[in-house]
Length: 204
Ligand SMILES: [Zn+2]
Image (cartoon, rainbow, N blue to C red; front, side):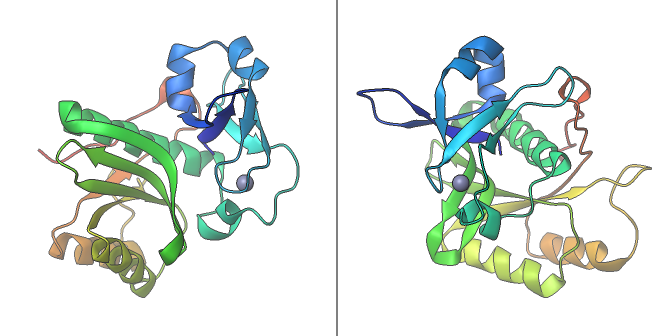
């Protein structure tokens, strides 16, 4: 996952994400710190390769971690998709952004949003990056649970080879329904090498 809690003696644990850390800190400094999972409190290890984008992983098996149960199975592609979407939305909203946090849990709906943007006027935007197909009913259920909490979800789907969304099937139905509800749909390429990251296109 992209986020973890920094544990410093005598200080409140604080969440950081790898997108920020990679810009502001060094590999050595990050590796020297103590990191914990935001959801289960178990130790986390930073993974900081030369090619693959950086992320945190549970140090050992953490099958009881809510993150495993409540979010889409974490693959390098999924990490890339949520990071691309989170950063594109941060740019899109610009100075309106108060905070962007990756991997935010909403216990009462048993969901972990891939990212949550809070704007200065108090509005909240949740990012749901979806690699594996889900039914229209599942998508509507998740969307409605966010809307009931006055959170606007932005869905991010994997872009097809030729750009845009893969033709046919469930994706079309999901996209059509989301657009008919007035919600934003993004497509992104899950480029897993950070240096070649392509940001999703936003409508003007
Ligand atoms: Zn955990």
